[in-house]
Image 1 (tube, rainbow, N blue to C red):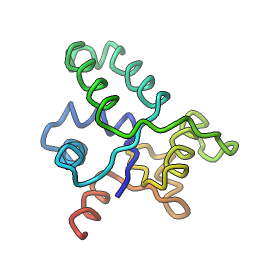
Image 2: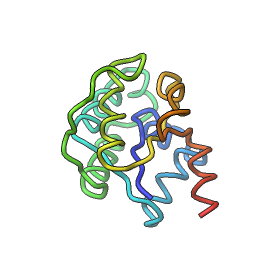
Image 3: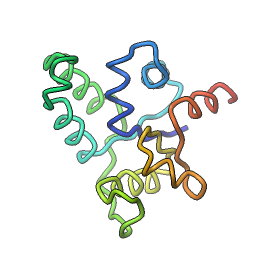
Length: 135
């Protein structure tokens, strides 16, 4: 199974080591799923780790090591073309295009994206874990 994890899920995996996002990352590291990233996603993650509210909770060295782990261990997919605006937040459209182009499930905590779950393969972290458990 392939998954694209939104930056909010990746960040949450570091902030709450026992939460559902951390469990997904752990399962990826154990080889239970294939994680798909892109340069745009990694850049978004790096920008977010630089925000003051996150710098106080995630050390710069930990953030850099995490991004490097993703860059080296996940499938680094080419940037897909976006098919116009699909999300209420157009900044999220690249995630939809990435997941679609790589036949992956998009895992997010973003309400704008989750509102599209009825028509696109988008799940919360908990729902994705439940699906993994059912396989």
